[in-house]
Image 1 (spheres, rainbow, N blue to C red):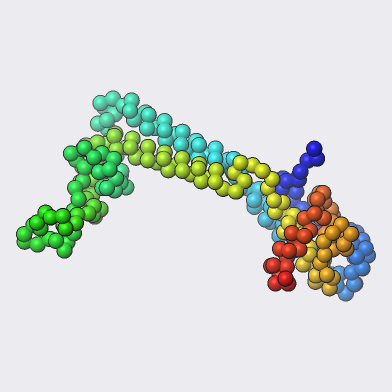
Image 2 (image 1 turned 45 degrees about the vertical axis):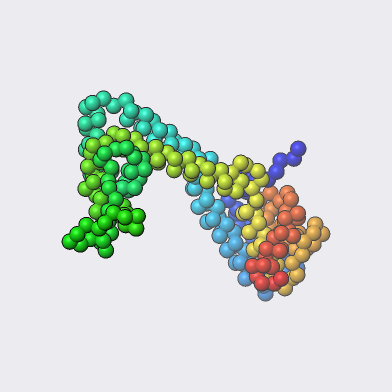
Length: 262
C-alpha cells in the first residue's frame, strides 16, 4: 500500500531560486512587468509558512498532552493513597494546611462530602430575615450557604478533619483530571486517522490567489495550467507533490469562499 502523506512529510519550505522563478515565468508566460511583484508575493507566502510551521514545531503534540495529564492524575492518586498511610504525627501536622485549604473549599461541598460530620458549616439565614427576633422556622424560611459568613466554620472544619478533607479534595481533583482525559478523547482525530494536510492546503490557496492576480482563471484537474503552476511551485519549495491535483478542487472552493468569488 502506498504511503499517505502527512504534515510531517512537509519540511520547512525554502524560497524558490532565481533560476526556478525564471523557468516558471517562461513556462507559464508571466509578463515581465508583473514578475517582480509576483516574486515578492510568492516570497511572502513562503516566509509566512516558515514562521507558522516553525512555531507549531515548538508546541507539544496531542500524545504529549495526554501523557502529561495522565502523569498529573497518577501523582494525585498516589498523594491521596499516601494520606491514608499517615500516622498520628502526620495527621496532627496536616492541621497546618487549614488556612490554605479552607478558603478554597465551599461550605456546601463540605456538607455534601461529609454529611455526618458535626463540624460541617451550617446554612445561614439571609439578611432580610435578620432582626431583633429570630425568624420562625417554617417551610418558607430559606437558608443558604453564604461563603463570606462561613470562613471561620470552614477553617474549623478543615482543622478538625485536615487529612480527610485533603484526601477528599484530591479525589475531586482526580475526577476533574479524568474529565480532561475524556475531553481529549472527544477532540477531532483523537484516535488517529488521516490528518488534513493543512500546510499544503493553505499554500495551494495562496498560489491560486497568485494565479488569479496574474489574470488567469483558477481551475482544477491534472491538465489545467493552474494545477501545473501549483505543482511546479510546491516542488520548488522542496515539498512532495503527490496527490496535489486531487487536492485542487477543495482548495479552489475554499479560495472562492475566502475571496468572495463564488
